[in-house]
Each structure stands twice: as structure tokens, then as C-alpha cells.
Image (tube, rainbow, N blue to C red; front, side, top):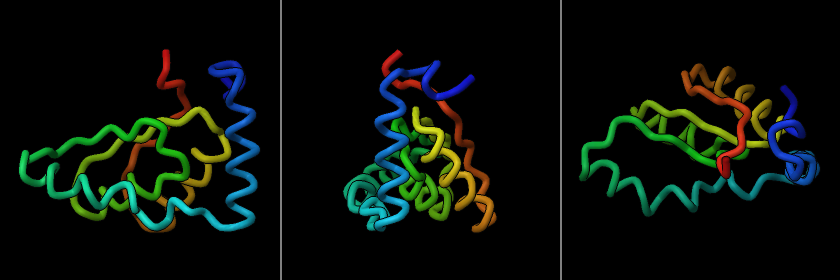
Amino acid sequence: MTANEIDPAASVWDRRHRTILDDGDPDRSSQWLTPFLPLLTTHRCRDVLDLGCGTGYDALALARHGFVVQGIDCSEIAIGEAQRLADAQGLAVGFRLGDIGR
């Protein structure tokens, strides 16, 4: 199944991710993750579902902190990059194509 079969707007996200992979991905900063790490630790969370994971930087950072992470995004480009990064870093993060709105 392709991203466009899952979500017709996926092509918009594919174009965005193609552009940011060429120009530099602002999500590499993990700015969204930092405020949540203390909460996850305090509440002894182990498993994390990253909805709209994009290129996976937060999911990968969580995996490096010892969390079991699954990431879902509607962009084939983003999921491909996320999986490539996980493989390159030897991290076991489950990435899959999907529409979080359905």
C-alpha cells in the first residue's frame, strides 16, 4: 500500500520531507522531546508510540534512552529516512507507514 492510498495528503508531506532532507531537517534538534523525557522517566514509561514521527529523530533519541519505540507517519519519504537512520545507528525502532487520523 502506498502513502497516497493511506492518506491523500501524504504527497504534501512527501514533498516537505524531500525538501527538508535536502535543506536540513529542523527536527534534528529534539526540541520537542526534551520537555517530555522527565515525564516519561518519572512515570516509568517503557513503550512509546511516536505518532507523526516524520524522519524519526525523536523516536531514535527515545530508543537511545532505552525506550521501546514505534513510529508511524503517512510520508513514505519520512519513514524511509527514519528506517535508514535507525539501521545506520543499530537501533531497533519499528517504523511504519500509516495515517494517525484514521
